[in-house]
Image (cartoon, rainbow, N blue to C red; front, top):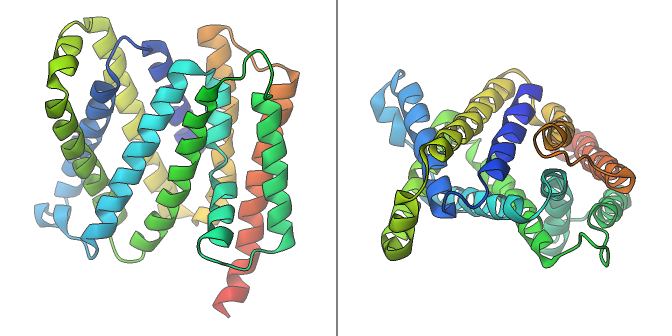
Length: 286
């Protein structure tokens, strides 16, 4: 799981390096096309017919659209915000899941979880510091990414009970690739000339980004086969440390004191939310 966070941070760092040199649609298309091919080959070893076997086509489509939206918001955020800021705000997913459970699903959320939500909100304020010189409206991108990822986790949880994990990730990449092909075709007048002008070095970076992102997915699958999600999720906050490290090494942008404190607060609130959920799970099942 720690290797997973390192590969995801490396993927995000590469997107930051690429910047606006490659159109956003092309970035997303290569990322999901690569994942579709790798997971397709991986799954085909166990039988080609298993590639499309699912008990819930609608949920698979919803999952793909949510993850594609998450990636688009993340990539857009990385073009405008420092890497640690984008990563920190994207880590608000567990807290947003709590809010969705209370406001949308009408679940009975205990005070302890609400305390974690408030703590996470404080951490977010420390990271973005509204009114500060670095604050801008673009923080909406990583917050939207966190929101869509929270919804994505809910759908993934339902699918994990009925479908194979590798098949699910393959179908997600397949649907996302098809959607992106349609979007590129609709916007071909602007997108295709922009793609044609991309330099070879930028394409190498795109290939590296796609490799890291897909490698992270495969590492996560291996982790989930060996340990429950509740145990692994706290380790996912290691991505904050890797994002800070890569930001310092590649861009010379180290988090200042308040941002570092905010990142720690967000991590603490997220881990606390996961641990509280894990404690309540046995009671719910009983």
